[in-house]
Every structure is written in C-alpha cells, then in structure tokens.
Amino acid sequence: MSLTELLKYGNWSGPGWTAGLSRKPFEKADADRIITKAQREVLGIDRYDNFVAKAHDLNEFAAQEQLRLTLVKLKLISNKQTKVGGRPAWKERLIFGAGGEDLRRFVSLDQYMQALQAKSPTKAQIQELGEAFIYYFCHIIHSNAQFAVDVQLNRVARWRNRKRGSYKMTLQLGFAPHLFLGEAHRLSLCAQRAKTDYKIKIPPVTALRNYLDDHLITPAETYFKPVKNEPHIVILTGPGFIQTPREVLVDAFDALRMTVEDKGADTVERKLKKAAPAGFDKIDDLFQFLEDLDWKWI
Image (cartoon, rainbow, N blue to C red):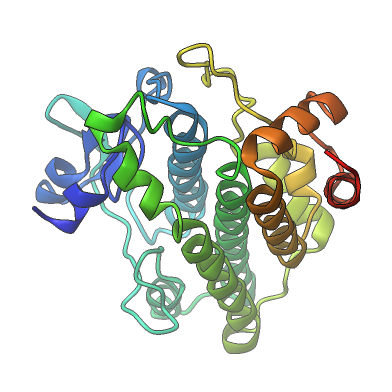
C-alpha cells in the first residue's frame, strides 16, 4: 500500500485525495484539477472530514486559483482548460518547489520569478508577481492554522467510522497540526525571502486581511453542510482567524490543545457552546475563555 493510500480517509483527507477523487488521473494527463461547484458540495463522513479536512483542501485550491490569475496576466502560464475523464482541468500544471527553501509542496516562487526575469520585466511586474506569492503564502498559512485549531474539537468519529480507518486517522492527527503549523512557519520565511531576495515590498496588513476576507474559505460557506446531524463546532470565526497573526494563532492552538488534554474535549465543547455559540470573533476572547476554564471548578 502506498503512503498516499495509507493516509487517505473519508472524502477529503489524504495527499491528493479531494472530494472523493484522486489527483493521479490529472497528473498522468499533465494537467491541474479544477474543483467544480458540485464537488464543493461533497460531504465528509464526520466532523473532521466534513469541516476541517474539506476547508483545508478547498483553501489550497483557492490559493492556487488566485495565484494563477497573476501568472496568466504576466504570461507565465496558460489559462487554457481541458477535460480529464470528463472533468475540467487546467491544461498547464503549476510548477512546484524544487526543495530546500523552495518548498516542494507549494508553488515555486523561485522558478516563476526566474521565468519572469528572463522576459526583462519592469520593476512593477516583479513587484506584482512577488505580491501574488505573498498573498498565496498568507492564504496557506491561515488555512493551516485554521486546520490546527479546528481539529481540536471537530474530531474523527472513531466508533462510527472504524471500518473506514478512523482509528488510523486519529493517530495521524496526533502530529498533523504540528506539521501544518511547521509549514506555516516556513511559508512565513518564504514571504520574508521574497522581500530580501527579490526586493518585494510586503503588502500592508490591511491589504493582507482584505485578501483573506475575500478568499479564505471557512466552514461558514454555504457549501458546508452538517453530516449525521453534526454541525461545525466554531472555535474562532472567519474574522477571528483573519485578524490574528500566525504567531498568535500558534499560541491559541497550544493553549486550546493543552486545555482539551486537561479538561477533556467534551467539557471544552460544552463550555464553549455556552460561552460563544457562534465562536469567538476575537482571539483575546478565546484566550480569556481558556484561562477561565483553567481556573474554574468544572
């Protein structure tokens, strides 16, 4: 069994496994998959798969779609589409990193910047490409942080889905949030390297937050529906994630994880629903809630 198969769970969790379809046919056709409206509606099999894994997958596609707009504008990639097994796809695949600082799992800043520089670009075009990548990195950073926080209470249904690998998935989730937060840290370094290596001006915080407000996908979107009468347990709302820097989101993850381990997920969930049924809009309110739980007799 391949590692990809080993890590697959439900309809949304696992490398190259999205909305119940593998990316392998697209890779064989040297094309990039396009997520359709119908595929966005595909339910997961439990809270984790249905809200956490699905949001993370859709954010990676959304971030790439936004980056493509600039790559097409600068004539670094084609916007032509094709069909793979009757499903829509981009005819030209994105180029991913080669390794090292050029992270393998993400679209390559270095390779596209080199391709642009070969065209004798203006400073404005270099800035435009660099900015597009910084927005791309910011999108994935917040998506990874959303995964790490949300997975603490939106858990795998271990008993109901035991025949579908729920126990194996639970074990994987013991380290997955840390891996994603590690990725977020490295992507933050990538954004800083755009500034130092290519003299890119970092967009102001308000511009980055406006981008996230427009493009970060959260389980509040209309195409997220409860499965098995299990709605999303909202910890931080979309605005809460968007307004919070990466470093503080990491602190929130650690604080929430320790509280869940100490008090139990059921207790934290029950108290959270009473204190903030729609989730917290501000990170300070989440920290205060966790601090109160730490001191109150439960």
